[in-house]
Amino acid sequence: MALDLSGLTNYVRENELQLATSLVFKPKTAQLIEGAGNVQVGVKSAEKINIMETDAVFQAGGSCGFSSSGTTAFTQRTLTVGKVKVNESICPRTFEAKYTQKALRAGSTYDYMPFAEEFTAKKIAKIGEALETAIWQGDTASGTANLARFDGLIKLTAPSGTLVTGVVNGNPSAITTATGITTGNVIGIVDGIYQLIPTSIIDNGDVVIFCGMDTFRKYTVALKNLNLFNYAAEAVDFEIVIAGTNVKLVAVNGLNGTNKLWASRLSNLYIGVDLLNEEDRFELFYAKEADEMRFVAEFKYSVNYAFPTEVVYFALSA
Image (cartoon, rainbow, N blue to C red; front, top):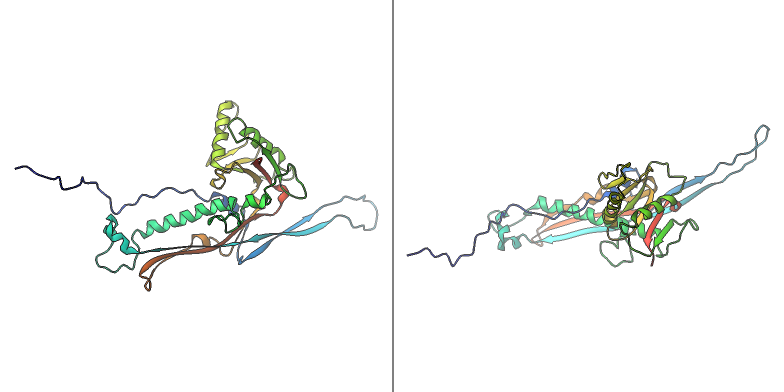
């Protein structure tokens, strides 16, 4: 007589109390802007960025009298917040049919969320990931759920989609190329942007050129290929100082796949919110009337810049 196990499936340990989750990228752009101190709170709908410009006109001295000269102007730009909410309902009974039943307590009433810590941590991380993309690619006319809540920096820079070389009527400077970004042309593109940054801000200390992770990797490969033995082309946290300058090339995930680069001083950028770090706040609760767990997060968010003439923008020509 022999042992017959043909009626059983092969055993695979399911590690029922462990969950693997995919990685999400961090909202680096928001962290950089917040670090510059330009976050306006208490914005329920829209709020102005108040701007003052003045000049200084020298006159001949050495005599009595007063003659007024020079101009001081007050202008404004608007932070219009997008009102965002994230809602999800989960029926804990669904866990009963799979290995996930091991996370359920004995009994048939579930007024709690299995894997709550892992679930909420991943949810907040995904909100941050979506915000990073929206800060750059947001477009209220896009029809895409995660991009349609507020206009991002790309839309605010070129609302008509038309780019103009040089500063025209107070619009940002722009350069274009008809070809894609490659290891053969990326250094020239970055250098071209650097040369268009206004001389009035170039020594400010917080001027950066933003690009996607994809473009950043092409740039570092191009530097390696040049074999610049007299220059330490070392990137730290996906940031690298452009050779011979005090300007950083900074990679952010919000520009991935866009073939766009964007330069400004960080202190020119503003975020508008109702409550600071509200995007990290949430509720996870049992809704007794529906017999389900519910996740709720709600916040307001917007982005803009104060001085368009300090912005330099690169995109592929149409």
